[in-house]
Length: 330
View 1: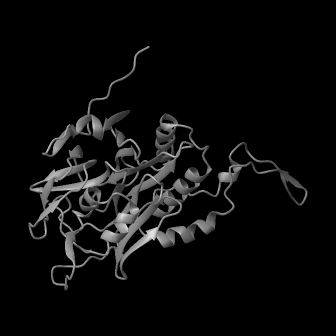
View 2: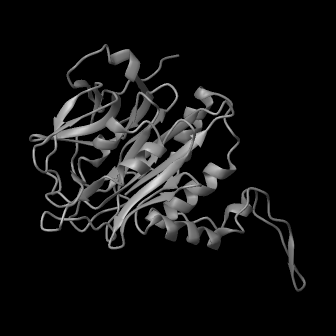
């Protein structure tokens, strides 16, 4: 369970971010991957070279480093979200005619090699995504991906039984299952939602008055299923006042995500574990800055690719996202 959005400021800076909702124990870290970094393709241990440096949130498990989201030096950003019941990858038994990249490596692969969404479209013609069991869930995680660049163009990559497809994501919102086309069609069920106020009505001789403000939003769904989160986020993103600068943009992004952030205990899985929002993170694709907060610490922390890169040739860990909370004093 995750939600992702893009948002542009009046200065045309493009911001991209997500909630990480998960029911398994994870310890995300913030990494800087240097330009020309060479790493092993987990499918066949062949060498892959990153063309661009990037900063991203991920986790090491065993000998595998998987990324959840990130932005590279060219302003190309992407994230992986769950896509249960719909994702269908190729397997080792299938005929692989192009370069094979595992579903767990795909995000690293595109962050290291794409300058823009245009590059992504070209890369998808050259690779096959192969399912690979991850060490956290011990399953082949069903994933789809959202990507954007400095221009604000946004796309979704989904591999289903119909094959690998790249969709233009004009609304700049993504959640989980069903597929993007279903979510976009479902928005038509909420065409009457409005930020304006409902007026008095008469039912026969009965005069009815609204209880107060926000009557136009009563049709918005309030649950935490993927369709409900998609609708709420799409409505808020398209109706907020356009932020004027970077600071206002980041503030707005986090406020939008408050309505889809899940507290512990609201969603309990069949494994009797809590599915909740581990962290919320946004990036400024123009400056390669990360802004994040965690479940246990609502203070926003900033990290920059350029503050930490320093021309290193080795993978840099900036530490785990989990950090002690500090209260301001008056």
